[in-house]
Image 1 (cartoon, helix red, strand yellow):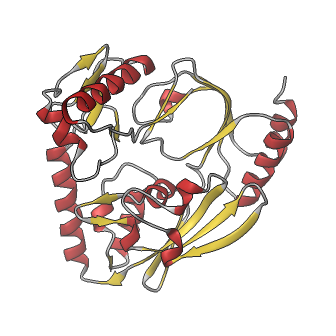
Image 2 (cartoon, rainbow, N blue to C red; image 1 turned 135 degrees about the horizontal axis):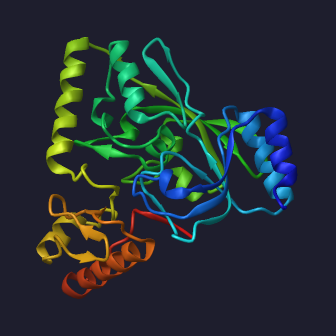
Image 3 (cartoon, rainbow, N blue to C red; image 1 turned 120 degrees about the horizontal axis):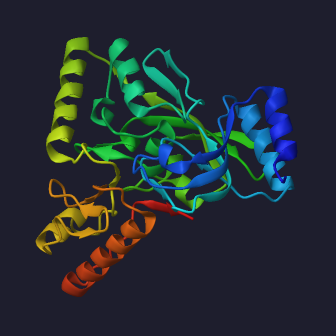
Length: 301
């Protein structure tokens, strides 16, 4: 078995892993077949050793956070998934909160709240990890990660160098960061620079934002969040709505009636259902408006 050496190492180091894990259990879309092996490291040294094993044995692998913008093939993933879910510590230092990449962004918001720190309320309810938040420059309610991210500690998995990226070095723009242009950069942790504020005001804003999400987004169905990136001078959801595609269904995949920017798993959707619906939407919008939408969902085969 090609994973024998890796499994022996994981057993020796007491690193938790699962064989033939259904990837649909790892992603918010609830779609995907079995991965050969899923590993849950808790230390950066473990990640470096695991990557060394995989590269030396030429084994395909991917990193996965909360899987809120990802969908796996129904055939699964022939390789190793390195999950960051257990790489999730959160600490407070004065007016900053330091979060490891696997931490849930809403947990970071709660930690900030408990320590009377304001500035991250806009992210409460975003169903993703800190790594994804930093990587995508996640945004909501006219705020984005770039407003609070001060410093990110990075591992270059090609050299195993560890270094910090500070402020403008993140190269943030709309739904973009330096990490998208450097695939070898693994986000270890990030420092969010916040400010002291009244605890009750922070709580009120968090609850207000959560209420807005529940009213405007189809949170009662599995999805991968916004299906498409925002095009220049417009919104994908507005274009899809105006094209009359709300409620459009292929198999178990449906354009949400509540928010046209979401494709939801309304009835045991398959990977191919979602792919077909995405292609249909892109062709329709291109034909009607001359705009080629770009997927925000990450498809893994």
